[in-house]
Figure 1 (cartoon, one colour):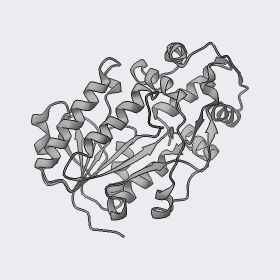
Figure 2 (cartoon, rainbow, N blue to C red):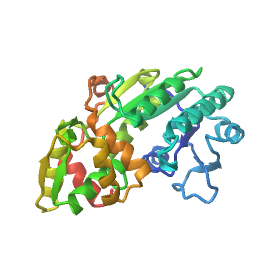
Figure 3 (cartoon, one colour):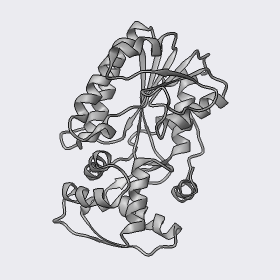
Length: 299
């Protein structure tokens, strides 16, 4: 069931997901406004740019004025490890207050896939908390939960890629046996764009994942095979995810404030428990090897 859509705001518009989504929505003919913290930020051609910061409430009314649907694609890990949960919480609350004042009709949020419970990593806990805060708004919130997103420039993919390319022999903790359901970035963009026009997704939470469930070991071994590299992985029980996060921080190009929470979250299984979105939005989901090949080519 499709509906007409007014102006769209993308927060995090210069990020890994935001810039791709902006390009897709412009190509589909929508009026797109990109909210950025720096006025000189590069945004896709054909979009409107507005300066705003979710941690500065006074900047948000202008950004949200006249907006029908807003995409919430921000997180605070890149701003430093210390206190990112508090920054995420404050940003979400500021956004809800401003979106309520602007009479925004719908919000679409991309967060993390993972089981609930006390043993979640700080990163996954924060993503779930943000979703709960967004749901307090008077607008309707759609929450998409994704695991590892496969695409050039994505933190999770670039971290796995760096490990494979720099450590042909790995002594790893037990997280290499944790199951994951990686999804191609193009499929994530497809789901995000389709949710805007499909009212059946309004007010609901969906797990989104690719067509294969793999362990992190299998992901790394298959990436190594695609690149023609040899890879030897030796799991040991005494190396914890927290300890391994320190040496991963030295190997990967991702900043420690981002890579360390991601590594610590590898203990949590991230697979889809509900595939309802596949019936509503029947995308052709990209197989893992194909998604990796596209990412290695820069897309």
